[in-house]
Image 1 (cartoon, rainbow, N blue to C red):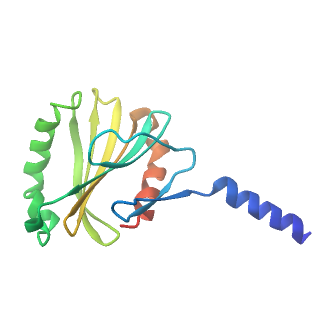
Image 2 (cartoon, rainbow, N blue to C red):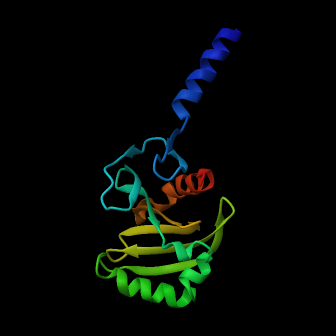
Length: 166
């Protein structure tokens, strides 16, 4: 009987386990959600990208100037209300009809983090972005999905955010 229990546990762990991915360049690690596949990172600063059925997780990492090493993320962003307004205006250059829905402050791995939810394409796509700073590195973690799938993917995003090791 113990042999069957062991086989069931092995199958369970194998079929439901997440895949660990580690950045060679920036030394952070994430769990790739089940069913997501790595995709080609488009853009110079994109370090990680996975996709599944029109949904994605993208991590952009940028080196900040050395003088920003001791600045807080709040000093970099400034007034969050102004930032959200300016972001929406600036995003129109690259995104179809961006609209900021809500934003605020949180923590990711004990790092102060700014989060922002927004839509594009007249509300067809929903995005959740987290921005944080570690030393002179700036991380932008963006989750996206068609708005019709947002409730389904929200637990994936929450687990991913909670499991990231920066």
